[in-house]
Image 1: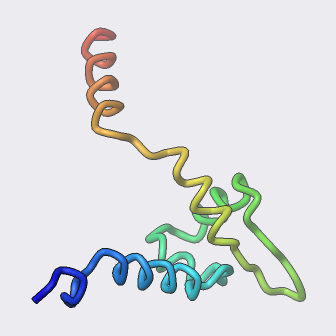
Image 2: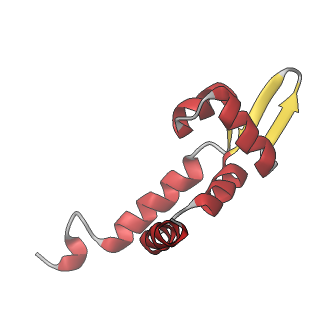
Length: 93
């Protein structure tokens, strides 16, 4: 069987991932966001407010996932960042 006919080909996988991204909800209610991000209500609202991702209308609070996800990426630590912090901590002691 040729590679382009196999079930798991790279182009098909890319197309599926792109379609899933487009279908993902752009806005979440804060209750849904608490579950998706595994954060307490207080922490979620603090971070979403700092990100500028909160939309309020008629008593409904929505969080823009794109803005919030982009904001959360600022806190991403790579392996190298983690190792540098460990070295700094050792030097400080």
